Length: 328
Image (cartoon, rainbow, N blue to C red; front, side, top):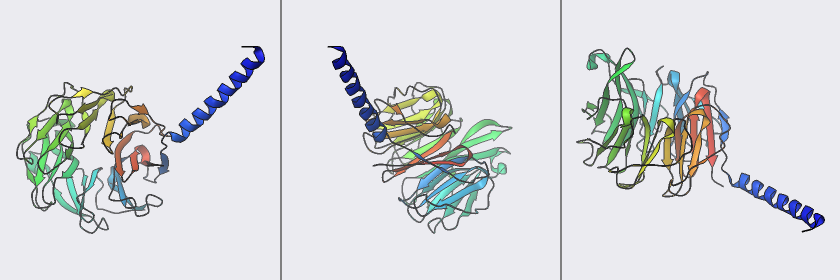
């Protein structure tokens, strides 16, 4: 190849490469940042019941609501200064959030919230209670998990359940005294709990009994997501992301190529999944979790919660950061 042809070839290759990069950048998912005035408080949880109506909750009892898909937010006064750790709606009218040692409920689509149950230290021999995750497997049956601590040291786990839609809650002894952090149900019978020390608990009888599953990992697990009775994922410390295809009988590690703590994971279908974590980390897979790629997040704040509804994604984290993603 002569020098002129070589120059044309290099130019043509560079142009093609530029178009490829531009196409790749366009194809790459983007998350749009939204900064809420939380007074510097972190946001710990986000939940949307449809494409328009959603809530974010965080430290200092911060709760804010949107009815226009996040274009505007209205803060709600809910009578607590404890950290709001989780928000979950059983249906479009009835929702719950956890704040410190209390369960709050709404029965009017989130317009008003009332304290439903408080777990006092007297019930736990003077220890402090922190509630982390709430899920319902049916209209009547629901569970909450958390921890019992004295002088900032965890001494036991919390597992409480309701069989009357949240009106009353009773404690159940879990087969682990370690901190329980997140719970997920895929049916009225099958559910999983994850937590400290590599804890994975499984029920096949609607929560009447729980058994341990061994993942071969001792670090803390922060989130579990199952799509059906067989396929599930768990995320945790040091970039750990585990997957199972047999209902948790065996677990295998997915190559995330990150070493930061991952705090939430969600699959939208059998192929597409997302995970988020500390330092603004966002990961995506489009091949059932076999490979994961790092996404542009536009923030270095820790991201604590992830939620998708009808193809629109939300993640929230440190100092009031909110990120929104919508499929093209």
